[in-house]
Image (cartoon, rainbow, N blue to C red):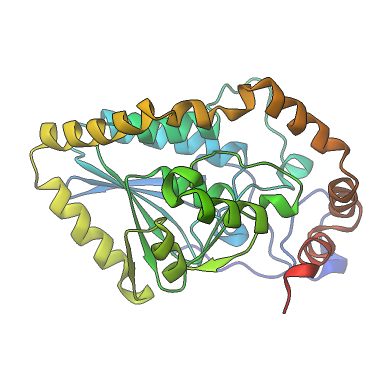
Length: 296
């Protein structure tokens, strides 16, 4: 078992390293940012940055792509499970990663869009096992999986609007319908697993202590089915959505009108002030400013 992390008092922290607000040192990027294990024809892919709620940086993106490719090419794998280590599935994009651990220029890597499209096109079914936070990119990654099973403590939200950003992957409207999608994406609210189930983001909600068992049971059922028929049915459903414009919607930034508005968002005063707070005062001050209107 790895040693438990030890909090470092603020006056003893190395200024070249990154720490959580509680004083825990955030590990440098490594291939262990995403773990891979195969059991009973099921590939378990685990986002492994638990100290920062599995937030997405270049390393997690790179290694998730590698693990998905590995699962797709592994003939022993019939089903893939995507989950997060620790108390969250994924809390969205890591806004501080570039400051401490910028991406090396000599490392080619997929984008997160490439990764979720691999999930979409993979003939094997992919199940998202969600506990804790699934926010921003996290809710969208889970949404791109074929099935989503959530613990009753899970929380979902498209909170990037609070930062002044557009959605990284425009999947929510296809999953929830017009009115629900507008409320989710315009409000930036965080909502429960039961609400996620009601609007169509989740297939099942189970007690948190039973999440792994429920996901494994579902995965084993899928793994027992004829793989060609599973691939055919996944492809058939996906094809319906592709004909309805799903992939064009994912690439919504290619539309020149939307791209112009997206570019102009960088000049938005509120967004600029918040990002300046993040840069100058740190994550906690940024969250206080960003979330002030959402506290009861």
